[in-house]
Length: 299
Ligand code: ATP
Ligand code: MN
Ligand code: MN
Image 1 (cartoon, helix red, strand yellow):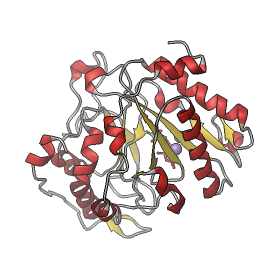
Image 2 (tube, rainbow, N blue to C red; image 1 turned 45 degrees about the vertical axis):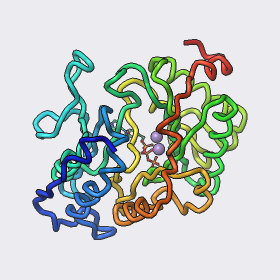
Image 3 (tube, rainbow, N blue to C red; image 1 turned 30 degrees about the vertical axis):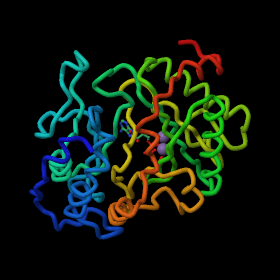
């Protein structure tokens, strides 16, 4: 837990807390704010120093839901303008108070970059976003995640799994921040094209709903500069208010779907966990360059 998270206790200053934001579950704005206050010790390590974007639903899921990249006029904290000169700051979250203030403004989802303030142009992780097309059963998606993991293993890269709180799964690969965005993006594209070439019945490397009926699109575009992916432990602005949950690969067979946990159940799950399934993620220092060479991707 970052020091900032320990030293500040969040105060819940929530207006319209009783407002039902998700008619499907009856969960309220106060439930969301409480979720972010309670999940702070688990989510803040993921958010530390990382530019973030948000998805807001100020009137609940029945009202306007919008994606926002810059905190101007919200009163929420932004990244240091010096980080990326010539560009508007992204959102920055480093305390429970930041999270609760966001919930007060109807922020439901928190999405982040693949790089941090320490090296803003050098990604320290790569994300494979598995998106099932229409008609893909959950069992096939689980198997697809294992196949992606197996190829990455073959390339010498350990990977970690998270639910998205939505329909698909995310496979995360922590990296030393050494290669730039174009190289990392090219590598992830090569991985996905390899999967689509070798198992074309299951995978597509091209986006578009038409291309992926019955198949799984592995979205590598999350790995480009200034792209974002829904962060671990973010809530989702979808019916049920699912949560993106880091899980161990051994937990995959028991998952009933990607919205297995919601803001109503996630914190209890985390408190009961004997060990962090992503323990190795935090200490991994793996390098992309050898895997790039194996796959024939030039820096
Ligand atoms: P699912 O498992 O249901 O696919 P997901 O989070 O992977 O959930 P996607 O639709 O695959 O959802 O989106 C992938 C990522 O694209 C999002 O997590 C988000 O960071 C980014 N994204 C989505 N909408 C926008 C937007 N309007 N502007 C910028 N980036 C967006
Ligand atoms: Mn997805
Ligand atoms: Mn996607």
